[in-house]
Length: 282
Length: 132
Image (tube, rainbow over all chains, first blue to last red; front, top):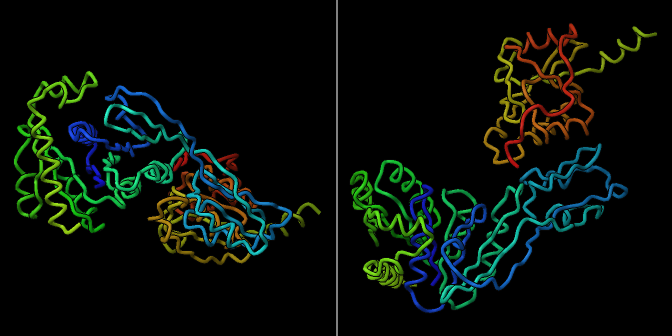
């Protein structure tokens, strides 16, 4: 089973949930840190670095001696990464998604592709967890190609937990596509509810089965719970507001290791998720 | 000879203004890439046309590049706007379009400032890119 952990709002506890779930699972699991702009799972895992691979995307390069400025490349490119109108063809590599359409569509074969480095994928072994994380280079603006490179390291049949970036935009979609079930982590505050609604709209649009994790239960109000009840969304885990959890987190520890009484809570999340998943007919 | 040259140049000059409206009294849009419209004014005939640019208002990225392409295709050789980003400026430069920036409130005011030589040509994009 491939589990996506997402949220509308940042800082709700996606990484906390992902890490503790992975550890409490006990058996071999892949943990993919898809928040490639600021990966942080490694801060909580003491492990051995296994691999470090460079990731590049193909970007167009124009042979001006062949180009007649017909502009076909620019008309094809949805992202305006290449533009040509009879004078000179301009390429904006930082906006290119690397699809290769401009090169394929060029009637004069004036475009070939060159690799542009966008970041690295690091693999760390920490006990039962194989952490695979993307790290985008400074100055690179587009996360999805690197997220796809991270996900390319998924192995058939092996369970995996995907820690998504916050929000509801392309990097999150790139992370969640192909996962079997999505956990939306939120906090019981007006901000948490506002962004949870956005995230719910997103996963419904994607047609994916999902449930909610409420973190820091005890702060804020009950509107997240009311919303979930009204919408028929299962709340699969409630993590109480507990100062000791914050202390463990601040020292880079895992809740299920430092506070064993929470192991059962995270185990129950796995069970509930598996049950829901089988109920969905997967 | 000199006056002939300048006259000939002016007869070819179309000036594009960024605007939210449809005529000379309309406000000058300070944004280039996401301007709602371009008013393209022919200095020779004093006629103008308006090009809709609203497709770019919600573009995820590359609005400046697309807008620069639109202005280039309009035949304008001069652009008067509020601000212009670096990528749009690169495209405009490639199309040999001169860029002037101004804080004029209306298209008419910007046109008047341009005609009387009160505007300075922008040497490069004057605002940061929104994307990368």
